[in-house]
Image (cartoon, rainbow, N blue to C red; front, top):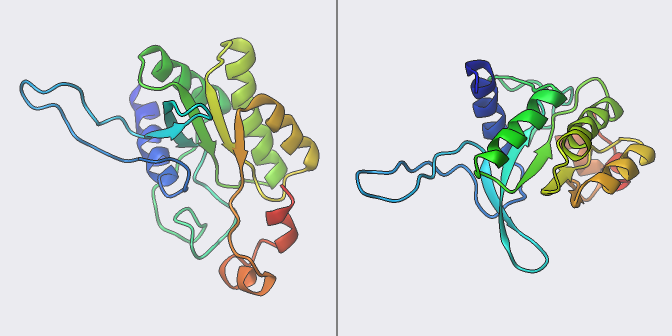
Length: 191
């Protein structure tokens, strides 16, 4: 894996760890002497399937650039954090590389919103299409729907992934405007 991809992985796994979704994330524990195993893979988290199996996932953001400035979000536009973004091909190839090394069984993908919700959803769908059609990856994929994306794109994503979720930031329009002035109630609840 080249250094550029590793740098992106570190930044985007760090940004993804604040997205509530998995039972564990961000652990770093190196093998010492005669121990067995390492807990040092950036972005590895765990979830459970309907039949109770524990599945290791690469929990990652496609990008942590975001056009919104939501007060509660680590990736908000005004926050001074390192920024990075994968191309859909880079993220699909990284997922396959982790899978082949037996680090993961699936992918959890989220993203900051760039250009528009539809543009961002299209890029996330592209990652999954590369995995499903080119790599014939049948592993578990969980995708965060992008609030404000078209129904067509949400439906398209739903046909490709095993699970979808959406962040519901705040229950009232008034409170949403205080914390996320660029979003509206309808765009949050519609997906």
